[in-house]
Amino acid sequence: MQTKTINVPDDFILGAAVSAWQTEGWSGKKDYQDSFLDMWYKNDKNVWHKGYGPAVATDFKNRYKEDIGYMKEIGLTHFRTSINWSRFLTDYEEGVVDEEYAAYIDDMINELLRNGVEPMICLEHYELPAALFEKYGGWGSKHVVELFSTYAKKVFERYGDRVKHWFTFNEPIVIQTRVYLDALRYPYEQNTKKWMQWNHHKVLATAKAVQLFKEMGLKEKYGAKIGVILNPEVTYARSSAPHDQEAARMYDLFFNRIFLDPSIKGEYPQELFDLMSKHDITFEYSKEELQIIQDNTVEYVGLNLYYPHRIQARTTAWNEAMPFHPEYYYAKFDLPGKKMNPYRGWEIYPKIMFDMAMRMKNEYGNIEWFIAENGMGVENEHLFKNEEGIIQDDYRIDFIAEHLKWLIKAVEEGANCTGYMLWAFSDNVSPMNAFKNRYGLVEIDLENNRNRNLKKSAYWYKEIIENKSFLAEDEDVFK
Image (cartoon, rainbow, N blue to C red):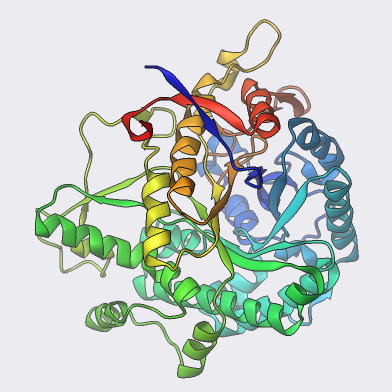
């Protein structure tokens, strides 16, 4: 197939992301400052690939200047990470700041700015303090919502003069879906009502953080913005038949609109309340909470998009002896002949970028948004090294080019998308998969003191940033 030059808008963000817990390591962490992920790892280490977890991760806390040097070399315009709530405070109730950890964040932000990289900071990327999970049940507690506001205020006060891009959560639906809906992760409790309560409290916590952000005047004083990073699962029905279309619509309601609608439109779909009532899974809420959500919608959103979700109508009856699960209304569909990432087990379908962009344009008021994560995880990347020891990750280059092509096409058709953030800047530890699948522009060599090496994709990404263009396959959509 022939190639075509794709031009990137001049002001388009081209950056990369990681999170605190996946990179920092435990250096300097107090014993009582475990996050939920730390607690899970300590209690269930055997399910993490080869026993690797967040204890050392990439040692970013000690090597951030080295890593930021690589960011500058690649030319990243933006870098997204998180502040680890469990480490930022020594007293979660009173909001007492851990000055050692806070000073590290200070220095890291300053180092980014000195090197021309704009920091994008998320307040919670799976870093709920373990103490709050054990004492209050985590995001099942309204008190934890208040404690999150206390934490957010301390962070805004400390870094608000330098950080222009703020986000409350990264993928706020994920933890409780793995724990309480599917019982796949510690502490393995299938409880759909808890799942719903966690969902609501994270929506409420976002709204209260937006309210606090406005009260503190961070937009007026510093030109900052606040949003949330969601992971909508771009959903396709097996067929055009009404039963398949309805199944896909129900999936979308439970997993996408449950965060998209209140965060952007300021209200939950009424149908969601009806279904929660029908299945006795309604979360506890007040009219005041719904008003706070309505009055404090986000200014923009980051969207994490990796692969499509294909849905069909159920062909078997639901087992009524089981607790309610949204699968009551749908079944997953395995598309024959789909293109796959065999290492991760995910379908590769770059058009998700365009289709989600058109949805944001047509259904969500064309709010400002950007791709906060997109990337390709591959196992045993050392097998792709050339004689110079550089990983030849052409598969990643092709993956990014095809997804970015569809994203730019959407921008040309009026989507208010302002950028693309690759997952990830460097290889990093992931829940359970640990370092099994590598995503980074920068290799982390676990066998050699975690030394860093740029991959071929890093040099390619650098060229895109410098030239504001790249080559991609020329498909009919561009003719």
